[in-house]
Image 1 (spheres, rainbow, N blue to C red):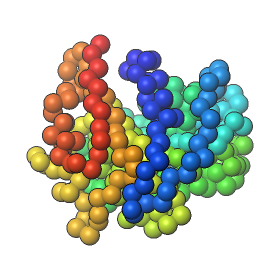
Image 2 (image 1 turned 45 degrees about the horizontal axis):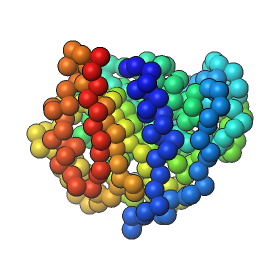
Image 3 (image 1 turned 180 degrees about the vertical axis):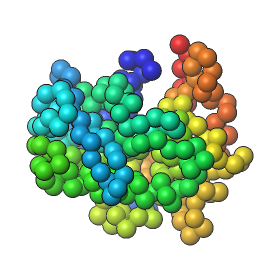
Length: 259
């Protein structure tokens, strides 16, 4: 992934917002952090546990390196980034670093087997665990130094690569099903890199993979950015568009990147 592509993603995360509301969601907080226009932040990272799940948190820091204090310019929004099959949470240093340098925290999971990407209830449990971890991180300096009050809990999103991007897509519209939704804002940004729906049956969409008593209700602005396509055509957009286009409840932009 080229540098300019990464910066596009960072800009998306920092700028996405909405004045509209969905009936099942609280009104979005308009207390946005001012966009960072200065020099790049150093990049810190910490390996933590979210109820037994290993995650790596990559964040704007005072200095580069492991367990460095978080930069004091927050609070910083965050994205939960689900890793591709065969990848680990330490395999995304370049893209997570580029995003963190511009003022967004990235929480990276370990990989998802493509056969598990349609198990939305299981993926949702992981998402809830990570959101709770980020709330804990914001309430103490014991997990990451200087993180107290430095995480923007009202502005966050989901993202991923390959099968992990399919996981991000699968959990995006179901936040009202979580008990955490009474106190915590829903995810309002979504992006996927080389999304892989090979674990989904033909014709599957949100309506097929959800538990029968769950409602599909993505929070406004209910938009997604999907980047796919390589010079060797490993990630072909036409293979995945039928899933994305199956719903009328998400506005999306698809970029086919060559080279």
